[in-house]
Image (cartoon, rainbow, N blue to C red; front, top):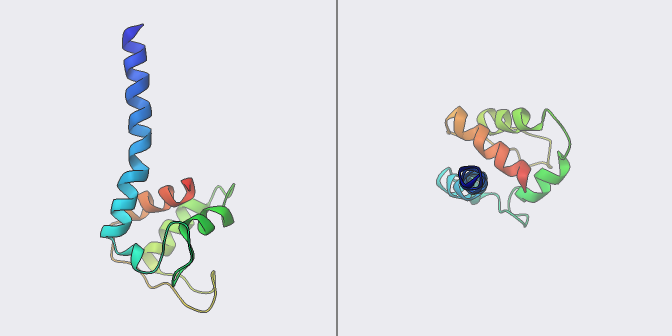
Length: 100
């Protein structure tokens, strides 16, 4: 029983790690140059992006694709250029954004 409690606590702590790691990854990947978590900058706030795509089962893949290939016309006139990040990092960033 104690093992189950410890494993549950460990799983909960690991579940919290991606958000912290993703803020660091977003900063390292220079996402924060144009985006902020909770306020519009040059690009939309990450929380706005999460709200727009809430419940969309294709959103994670679409966001990762936008990060890798760039996007235009989704948030106004300013296009987002393709970002030089690893596909796994783009996927992690997309997943994190959608948790906000």
